[in-house]
Amino acid sequence: MNDIDPGASRIAYGSGESGGSRVRLDAPSFAADPHRAYEDMRRHGPLVPVELASGVPATLVIGYQVAVQLLNDEHHFPADSRRWEKNVSSDCPLLPMLGYRQNALRTAGAEHERYRRTIFAALETVNLHKMHDSVARAAESLINSFCERGTADLRMDYAYPLTFRVLSELMGFPEGAAAEAYQGMAAMLEGVGAEEGQQRFVEALIGVVRQKQVEPGDDLTSELLRHPDKLDLMEMVNQSALLFSMGTEPTCNLILNALLLLMTDDQYGGEVLSGAMTTRDAIDAVLFEDPPLANWCVSYPKQPQLVRDVWLPADEPVVISLAACNNDPAVSGDRKGNRSHLAWGAGPHTCPAQSLALTIASQCIDVLLDALPDIRPQKPVRQLDWRPGQFHRALASLPVRFPACPPMRLA
Image 1 (cartoon, one colour):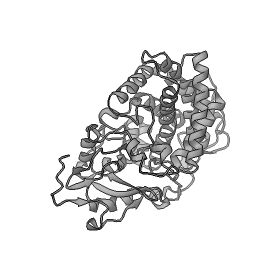
Image 2 (cartoon, rainbow, N blue to C red):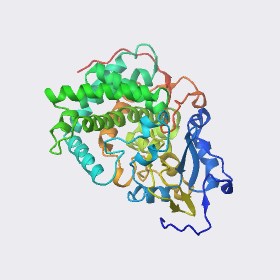
Image 3 (spheres, rainbow, N blue to C red):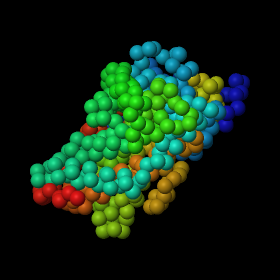
């Protein structure tokens, strides 16, 4: 797959020879209907020339088998972006999202292994049964805040505050610092005010880490500090940032995308309510069709790589379209009980917090549907707005209606 043969007659994607213009992944039209864009891309094969932003070329992988190969080949496709950064302007809006970080996501080799080791050790201390109860209490409290109205926006009234509250508690973040960190992270994901967002994000976390160095607690940030590898201040900030950012925004979007499916698809909604299908089955369907991180797992070839008769340039981002790969016609089949999707990634950078995310999402969905079984969207799916961004699949809002009811009695 990776043999270099300069004399071979191969297509350099994005060249005039390929005849392919680059799709802009930050365009509003892409956010509105990415699945149509993926279908149009398939005429190019599994590797598609795209722009992540104006003047920022990349290759989008939309073939499942190719994605699995690349995700398991860290030697030729490392996640370390430092060489790419030298070729982009300092004001590139993607640097806050794709720039090098001292964390388990943006490093390779021994450095990556060290950071991943600390992440795993911290996550192993989480009591999932206790987490289950914590999510249920937060969910019931939030539902009580809007159940008498008969209407709600499930993003701002439920999924966002729930994931924010649960992750802030897990990380040991004070409310003010957590709010600053979340707002900064959202700006980075959407690419709007990304540089300022990054600054807010980092400054908030520096304050938290310094506080935990003096007063450690029973939380993930303190567990990272206790690890024998002894992370320094900025390593701590970067690991904490990774856990918080990947735990809040993608989990919130997973919850919303799953609720949308359950409210609009008679098969899934009916079978989950009847008990014929589990909430986990519905979540897996969303992880196949509309994963919250639709385009992610970015790598940077250290030298030109030949993949499926296409030359991938050195030091240019290769982005895995988890959504497109999951829906690759070449691997279609019965998905019931099937968890072969790539929503968690694959290879050495596979998401280490799957159980945590699934616990939060499943319990959040179950409590809502138990309390409000007749909940429905206020508008057709085609009229819902999706937030801009190259990497996520995120609803801007999810307005719903339901028969008003009295608040639940909290334990």
